[in-house]
Length: 396
Image 1 (tube, one colour):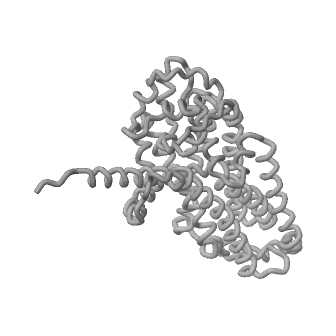
Image 2 (spheres, helix red, strand yellow; image 1 turned 180 degrees about the vertical axis):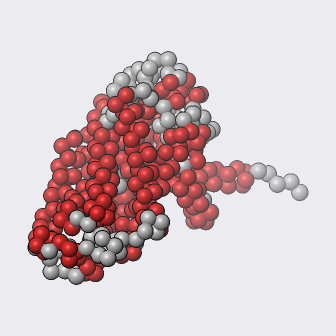
């Protein structure tokens, strides 16, 4: 089969953040110094070489990049200061756009105005929907004590004009399900395209059905624990990443799956499971977010030295989402109905566009692509092992 070469491919990658892609001359120091290297996956060298040679199709089907956790160890060992870590990040953005069948991911990664337009567009739509269909009750100003419960906190589900608390809660809950269905559906279809590019279009690879089941545990295990990241020099980065990821996952489950049990009128004690999980999620996000912000300003670590505009978008909207959520909680506790209502609306106007952009199209999608790439690698290894077993001669 002929190999298609795109002579302008590296120029197109520059739009995804590649700075000096000519600096690498493939000495192999980066690959030799990486603690995550396996016999089958020789990154960053192999990935960068495919990009330099314009092997677009091979790069799109190459899952080596997802075995990398971008710890920056490779950049430290580069004698040419080519910064292979940042080149790999840029190629990762390209691969995300290749998986995305809608083309929006490419727009978001290469044109800042696209991501900003979508974010503000969806946020403004949320504000308009609240203003038209879920406006605040006039009694928030006239008789605010009506919205205070026995514990002195705000009854958050009864602040909307003309809606009972239960009806309002389920409107928000169904809205959560719609958001999760759309964002999750887009991400799942992108993952299916990832499988197509990595496995299914290669007719020489046949994955038996049972392998998809027997190797599934690796997908779950690597998503939940990120064990490979522990091999990198910075052990605290693994711990911070784990707390951050589990915190956000818990908050996502509480909001989307358990909202009727989470957003209740009663202000429960601090030791209740709702507040403990909510505090863990909030602390988990800040434990990761604050050092990352400081590191990107100081530029004292290889992995944080260069920032793409989407890196800052993600940090800012995640920070605003968390802060606005904290404000809703504080205003509820101190019994301020007006402040609670408006901070709640603003919180959703930030949260919804963040989820709709980051989960299927942008930075957050790597949390799904990486464990699925490890899953794909396990499937390929299972096929190779099966072929090797079949080729071993049996002597009577």
